[in-house]
Image (tube, rainbow, N blue to C red; front, side, top):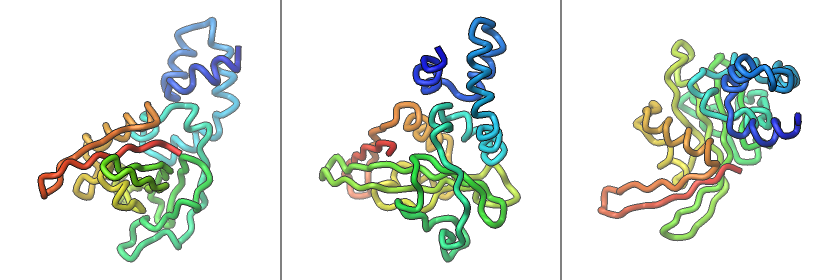
Length: 193
């Protein structure tokens, strides 16, 4: 039964959902608490690192499979932002950590496909706290022209951008299209790696 919960329920539930379910349903309480106990240290660390609006949009199984990243100064760009991650710098689909100034960050590895040309590209994006004194303003770096359209929102993540990101995490793939300045519709497909 533990495997059923781990592999069937956790992809659909957030950490908060599992805690609430364990409190409401006595039948599953023991099994759910076993999962929470097994991963509690890691999940508590992630929850303390990232704000709840990011933590809650990602399922429990994705967090369990994520990795903690020890920050390296080479990832800081000329503007002081975390925008120099490379695809091979991270082993897992999701990574999390804090930089030298205590700003939290999340890395996401994905395959992006330009549906107009069929061009595929492995990429990584780093979603990070823009200012060390404001824990609610996040932006991104390390993207490229194939990943940028999914995240671009004028410097600070908009609610629309967060909704796209949440859909990507829940479905593990997303088709996104937008109109360019030259009356062309561009379509990209993103798949979590």
